[in-house]
Image 1: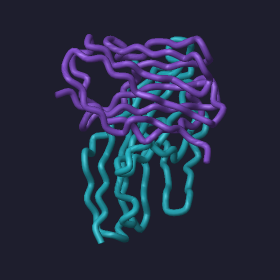
Image 2: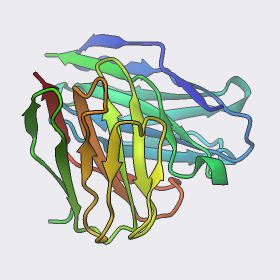
Image 3: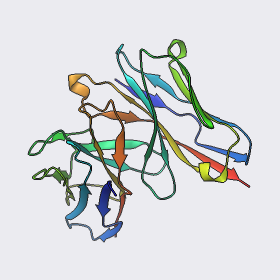
Image 4: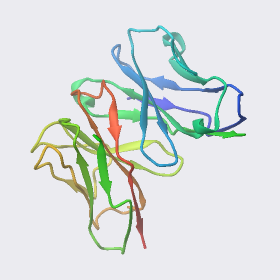
Length: 117
Length: 114
């Protein structure tokens, strides 16, 4: 069975500090996809990144960066020089596109990030 | 603008009543999904639909029903059989088949049972 663990319930930082969100996943499959979504106070989730299990390159997009390590089953997310607009709930998610799991994106419990000026 | 529209945003229901949440998309996506979000928990899949006139149960389908008569629409009915319906409901769609791609979400509907 798939499982995604986001151990940090809430992280509070002061603007311009860096913040790292942890994500640990479990799956028996060799092919899988990992995602990060952001949920601002408005409610809708916004896609941030997708990574497949065969691509372990780290990625950077502006102030966002992701560290994927298969050896530790982790897909951590770092926001550099945080801003107030980064305040949101961030979800890590896992999908296995096998027949029995079609449509089933397994979400972690989410991490609330609070950035204060 | 393209996107997903959910309505109503807030809904109050008395126990024993059925309620239908609307979800409309103009992204021309084949796949649509309904998720439930409870405080401090991740999203849980209720139902999903790969194409028109076809839908499948997710992890927590009991007490819910859906229909997919049009590509653009995927309404969710919360029936009186749902034991604990108070929650935040999110509709989503995707262009690609299995969820290997980006999901687009609506702004959600918050249901409160009085």
